Length: 374
Ligand SMILES: NC(=O)c1ccc[n+]([C@@H]2O[C@H](COP(=O)([O-])OP(=O)(O)OC[C@H]3O[C@@H](n4cnc5c(N)ncnc54)[C@H](O)[C@@H]3O)[C@@H](O)[C@H]2O)c1
Image 1 (tube, rainbow, N blue to C red):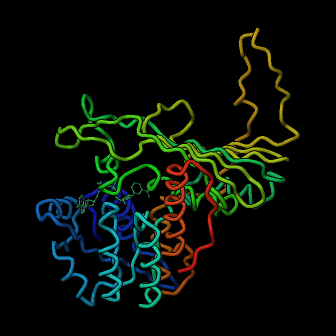
Image 2 (image 1 turned 30 degrees about the vertical axis):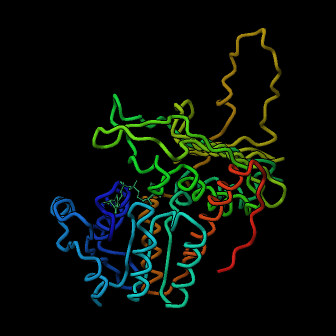
Image 3 (image 1 turned 180 degrees about the vertical axis):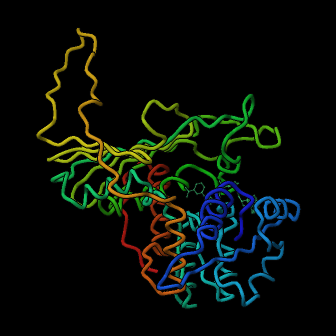
């Protein structure tokens, strides 16, 4: 596991997925049979990687990636490094015959993302990419409504993602500074459009075209060491997408907005028969038959509680941490050959949308999304 000194690698993948899977006794695959992952933590900085290993009680750690890849004992390479570092490490892991699983985006450009697909296919290894939003309870419920035909004909989708990320001058920033520098693989388009591709494709309908306006609202920030730096990457992206079936999706992504909604990310779908809106965990719906009849009257104080007209969609099940659920599926894919659709090709599609979003912004025009071939 490489990149476990970082936010995602440590919190979601090591602590809440791999260590949790070990604590529960592994992933059950049959009568009395379980898969128990035995992680070795890899990092560049001995002090930091050792500190993580000791704090979490992980016995094996190393600063020598090549040596780890050369060992036949460890079958899977996992990468949650900073995005720019990912492709080189994946190339090495694939060449060493490891199965690979990694954070999104798989690369910062489509050419590299597709090269990884080709390498993985040629090596015959198993591969996967994190698509965590699909495993959020709110998104699971929204998809359930889509699959059940609740919406009738889907007309439009509206997604609102974002929150205020402190600039770093008077309060500590809650995201790493590389996120705001394009030369370091930062930028909200490559970060968030790689989520929007699989969210839209797999929950609503395939994305066919994109129009995007990026913006760097805060031009200067202060890094982890207290040093001012120029924000060379966009910190907000205003995207419109055309989906198959003439569905229009608008997705706002911003690290420069303050939250006045139920969650840091909400996604609303409007259809002829009904509408629904989901956050990370909850989902509310309003059927055509239960839709009130709003009347525009600015002369009166708005006293209607519009939210009261929505019904909460029940859980009808229990939800585990989405990162962990996807890890369990990947482990079963590697060990038992169970299906795992979220592979490097799906990851490349996500990079494609980000790249074409950037192109749309630079060229100030709509850009079609061609089908991908490795
Ligand atoms: N799935 C999600 O929801 C989600 C959310 C946030 C981030 N991510 C992805 O996870 C990856 C890691 O993001 P993060 O927020 O954990 O970042 P982070 O800065 O907290 O961690 C980065 C990790 O990469 C390592 N690293 C290796 N080479 C480096 C270098 N040259 N410079 C700096 N760090 C280097 C760091 O040591 C650290 O372990 C990114 O690719 C990001 O896109 C995914």
